[in-house]
Image (tube, rainbow over all chains, first blue to last red; front, top):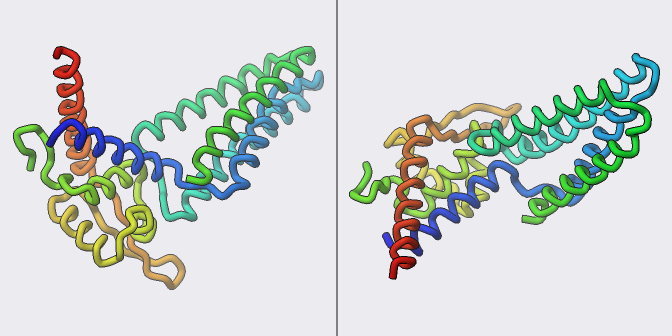
Length: 138
Length: 104
């Protein structure tokens, strides 16, 4: 086997892995996931003065984040693909860790930082939308 | 099952490599999903899967969703390890060629 054939086979393997890790999505899914991510981070940083309201806002943010992940998982299941292995699984674990960091940060957030969280939320939501959009029409 | 370059004979055809690389991203996938992705007819996929099952790289599970019979395919640990070795050998071929070209 020569180098061109080897590179071609490697590209093919990468494409196959990527397709099973995240199969093509319906057109509405990236936008909805982007909105859920933006909402999750914004809610997380809402920081109401009342402790219970603050916990409720953080729980709401976590629920929105989990809803986005659950939606992607469900769409994958409907296409007959279950479970994640390899680098995609590692990436998902890292995403959960980032979510946990946001939950901890949300506990110590202050009302003056709401706009910062909203800005991060809009940026992260747009990024999620863009990343998923590239896979939507694949 | 590997040759002198470390390439696994079972992945020599592009179709088998596609099937196994697809399955390497999930715990299991429905026969139909793999068939659609690989753009194969059911008998053609069955033939490839049987060959991979024979060498222990793919496992097949049959069951029902409601009343409909379904078949799920999964890459075994042995298959995952063989695929990793095959991809490593491919990378080595590509890297060696690139290094050789740089030296010239």
